[in-house]
Image: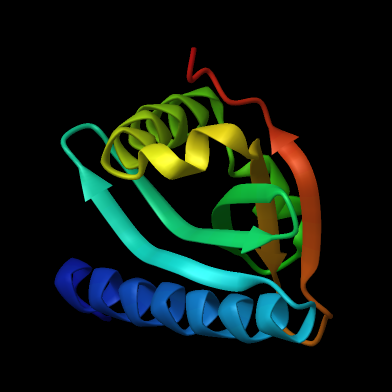
Length: 125
């Protein structure tokens, strides 16, 4: 039986792999990656990406199925993303003139990633 520490380490590695896959997916769709793994006290953003006049704050979720990944983005995760987005915008004031969006990018084994624009309402006002 695996220890809890080993299970957490394995989940962390899987999450990093999913984020790397998400970045590749986004770059193939002509997004420019501005930031990755942006942490602040009480919040985090997996990926900040730019395309056209839009800045997307992207939550990457990897689960056994795409539906499970989408359902894993709960109210707490949405609040944490919004909080981190406020901090990111404070550090990058030039971005305030862009369209701001909270996206979800779901990853599951043997499936194409599912990018859902504006899946997460941002409370940045």
